[in-house]
Image (tube, one colour):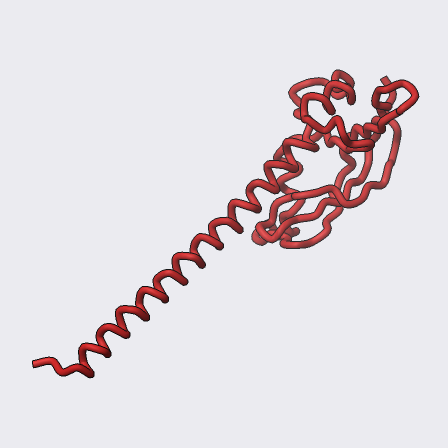
Length: 158
């Protein structure tokens, strides 16, 4: 026969399990949000800065790009013209077995860059095309998430 102390102990254990279960569930949700947050960051980077090399570089126009990518409010913006593979490899270490995480890495070769600057006198974007060494920031997952710096090598004229 169960006495009152045993019943109280069982009730307390059940209550404790509910609390711990709730904490574990909240922790799992938080981890899931962090993981998806990094995916969004990488996707946003590609959506905002990447120019697909399937078109010729000279075909891209700042006015069109800024409107299509919903960046019209920005006074200045950079686009990079390279294969996705080349951008993805920026965060790989020299031995290819590990990723740079939360690090600033310079691309090993120059990349074509399209700089767009708003010109308020003409109400349009001015374009500057160049070959540049680009410094990227690799996030905690080892993916490029932003452009941090740039060293122009040569200007591209069309």
